[in-house]
Length: 401
Image (cartoon, rainbow, N blue to C red):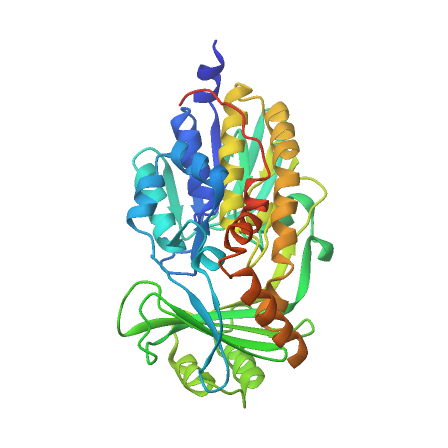
């Protein structure tokens, strides 16, 4: 039996259908594996933040996946974002390459793109999730919230920052999720500023409001709110409570904040979470491995989507190269991706302080630094700086799909 035939007999369960899950499903499907993706949401999640890709590594992986051209066709074409004062006067322009990379696309569109390429060959199960995992000598017995047990050769947790797969396999450990002293919220708002693929950012000590128009819709924009805080206790399912937290934290803030808070009251697409990172000692145990945010997530600024895409490419390739031998493949995957992921996480550690510096002095210092970095003299250096973490991995050749 050839290695390709052995991969074709792999029966793999992936938990999560955001980005990492469908990306891995696309890679495994092309190598002939049988793939099931389970997602607790009732359907693909539309919308979400815009995500960007930068540098030759991202381009090489997306090209190998066959989606580089379509990402360009659907990109946001986001332009400059401008830091403003309380009266809306410009303080510094942030070049598009800094905030939006080489190409940028909405997370929901990216997920839909990969889903459409895999839905005919991959089994997608929506509205369900993994309830229990029991590993045996030749597989994993999986029970679901729906109650129907099934058996798989391998299980991959691609279910995000708050991964239930990680908790089931590695146990609950508060050290796995490292809080970064900031929270972030995002939701749709009216485009009262008349923005056209441009953004505005206003900061006060410990809090920031950004408004951006990413798709050219003259009536619609997106708000991003960041605030510094100790760790909060709240129900992640209680949207009303989250709205109250945001309203309290941003009460009395200047610029367009009152209008943003009025829009928050009616928002039906609120995203709210701590800015945090995932750190685990190992990315695999037995026949179960973690991918993307579940294993090395970094909310905001850490190129988490790029890391997930690269991780999916490496994991699918190593399984193909090892002929389905998960011990060899998982070990190589961890060796090759861990340093790369840590480098991306280091970048994300600056996200909260960048948006919401703790003092007026720090705000002025931030503005001076980025005014200098975005000058024509340093523009090329600045671009290389933003790509450094995204390109700090050497990809090896994997068997042709």
